[in-house]
Image (cartoon, rainbow, N blue to C red; front, side, top):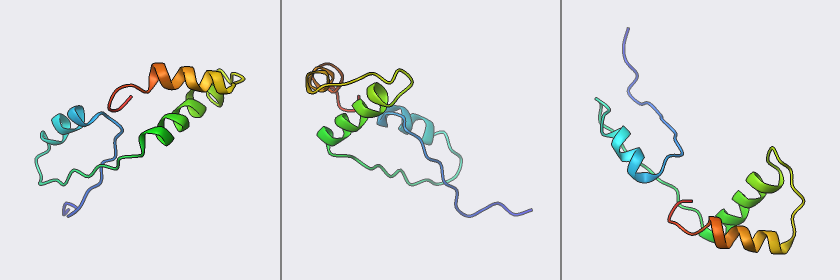
Length: 77
């Protein structure tokens, strides 16, 4: 049985954690990252986690602004 020449591993970890995991691989690797525009990413996370998520809360513009001020503050919330 031969081993595949290429493998794919997708993950949503923070960069620092991802590098630690990838460096443990035995085969050569290429680490590729996509970086989203921060404001649209924050708004997307708000609707995913707060509005359409398991709690399905009604939202207002004030709720969105509060979320952005409290949750979207670090490099990769």
